[in-house]
Amino acid sequence: MRIPEEQIDDIRNSADIVDIISGYVQLRKRGKNYIGLCPFHHEKTPSFTVSPDKQIYHCFGCHAGGNVFKFLMDYKNISFVESVQEIADYLGIKIKQDTTPFSDGNSELEELYDINVLAAKYFSNKLLKSDEGEVGRNYFKERNIKTQTQKIFGLGYAEPSWDNLLLYLKDNNVNLLKAKEIGLIDTRDDGTFYDKYRGRLMFPILSTNGRVIAFGGRIMNPEEKAAKYINSPESRIYSKRKTLYGLFHSKEEIRRIDKALLVEGYMDLISLHQFGIKNVVASSGTALTEEQVQLLSRFTKNITVLFDADAAGQKASMRSIEILLKQDFDVKLVTLPKGEDPDSFINKFGLDEFNSKINNAQNFLEYQAYQYELEGAFEDPTKQTTAIRELVKSAALVSDELKRQLFLKTIAKKFNLREKLLEKELDKFLSMNIQKENIAAQRSQRIKIPEPTRSVEQSVDTSSPNSLEKDIIELLLEGKQQIIELIFDHIHPDEIKNEKYRKVMEVIEGCYKNGNTSLSAILDKVKDEEIKTFISSFAVAQEPISKRWDNHYESGKIELNASLKAEDVVQKYRIARIDNMIRKNNNFIATHDDDEKIIELMKENQELEIQKKLILEGKGNSDLI
Ligand SMILES: [Zn+2]
Image (cartoon, rainbow, N blue to C red; front, side):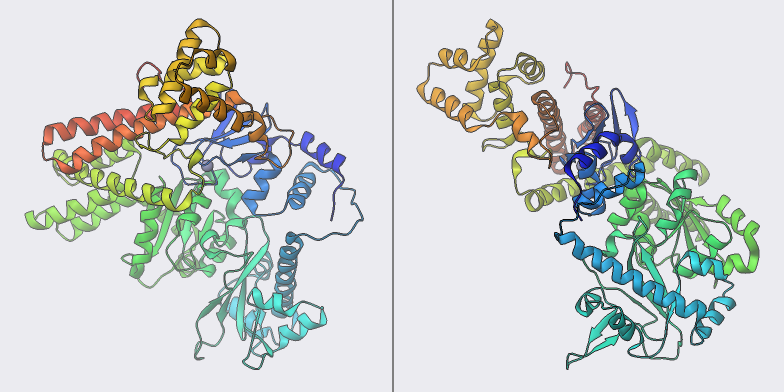
């Protein structure tokens, strides 16, 4: 499909970027702009900025940016045309299609989605209408799942035969290799195809957006020697790590009440939904991934995890909680009686009982402390040390300092422990965590960022020409008064590590004080020939900044001018400077035993983190940092 150029302009002009993006990211107004947690990288302090004036977004953390189309393309992994289409649909604009045929990579993906939809309809019809589907209908009847609910979740049934779906796909002229790619069928050694799902109840897995991206198939006959569940393989349209079962059905409710329930199985979720509890997501039995938690965090940061008693100690659950805490979720815990899961519990005890369980959910950390108390761990001095260490380990995962402090206070009071003792243990863990994070950050920086010119994590303290320093010189050489002022307000030439850059900056500072910052004026002032050549070649080699920034976006019409870039660079420089100070402190903390000094440095680090936050929010005090 091709959309006429003027209509694309029309749609772009009619769409409000804040409106569209806030459907996916929680945005808060901050001055002229809106900010939120970036959906394209993991962060705890918002650096994702949406400008209603310029109709663009930009992340100061990972440098994702663009217009409203670009956002949807990256967020949903869809093509340009699809994103235009989606916004047109949203705005109620009817697209006049250009009839010129053409194909792009995305019509191929469309084909995969279409095959899945076809299969989902096939399975659903089998369950709801066919004679063979009676076993499936009976199963759901026994589990108290109404027909209406089966329809809502698109549940289906795959017959035990080896070629039912296959024949149906053939009848519908489906490309069988594509059907194989998404795991609906497979090939034998002799190259013939067969159905992958046989004698199974089918649970379509939907994207957040409601597209069928995969299936889970539960075996009907438990006697059979086959896996209880089989799932679609990873494909171009399905990534298990990035998908949460049920989120499509629950996202509105989760957003509305700002709370989510986490259960394990498909059936748990479906049962609860039928009872009117619609803010549920399912982990499908494995530990949550960071991507899933991040996905969920777009809708809420409050989660109640439902355990069946046997699972309470399971590694998968603990691992999930750890990831949730790390991403600043408020985690509560409900344990169900032995032998019950959410599905069986609500069917046996009813909605009120269930709700009262949820309402009495314990904060995860309190829950943990309570478990130790039950074991009598706080009465025995040796056990107490271990228990406290474990508790503090969990607390250390919480990055919000206030929350952490509050937790320690509560625990100390409730279980009659010395608060100081807890704090001391906590400090030990925190310094260990920070070091781990630093190492991890350095590693990921090495692996992930191919072009080091725009990296926040970039340390100021490198001997090679530093990318931020280079950006600063570039900006200064653009000669705009306002930008030069901004830079000298925050950065002193003495700080610049690269010798050439430092000299250039010193010269420009002189010119700035004399009020003439044009390139020719600057060159006039330079005595050193080498520096002179350096400046001119440097200036010539650089395209104007605004032009280069435009190239980041598919439309040349977006203005992201040099001042914005300057603000970005200065902000990053200041952040890098703080990170550097924090790193130095941490090095000291890690290698010395001087307790008093260590506490002092940790306090200083806390101050620095606050400064960093202020800078990111555009409120940093330039006199201090
Ligand atoms: Zn980002």
